Length: 190
Image 1 (cartoon, rainbow, N blue to C red):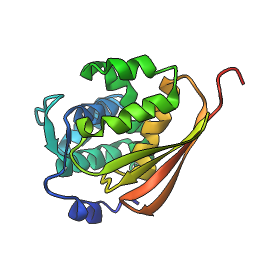
Image 2 (cartoon, rainbow, N blue to C red):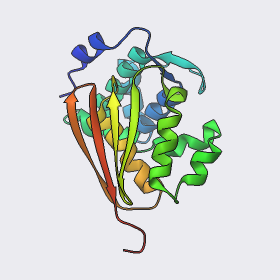
Image 3 (cartoon, rainbow, N blue to C red):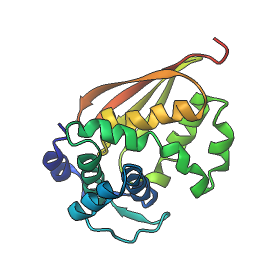
């Protein structure tokens, strides 16, 4: 399902992500109870990580897959989606005032903020926002090693929820590491 070994081998050794992603993943496991945390820590012992520091992308992928195996062993992609659906909730921890100010207002503006601040979150790949209408945009991903069709999809679904709108997110992949998410929502009051 996740083709983890293949993805890990393809991931550049210099790739890094912010420490808050590890916290977000551990928090998702904790929401499933002590037994889940114990199993998660058997698979991957706890390590101290600073929220703002950059850490190995490969280590994060290992962490994310271990959490997915605990949360939804029969359907790990759904676990990735669930974990990343909470991404917007971590914005206050990195003092993203502009991002927080946009939440609940302009969905495309929030996505634009994410596109423009991509290097804050990771040192690899590229995102490109393509606005397509008042309630529709496409986020393009290039050389993205974290699962677009599950993790990033969940992140965009969480973004819609944080903005207080109902919508859909559909993945369209060119390869496991490049593709796009079609993000559509209903205008408020409709």
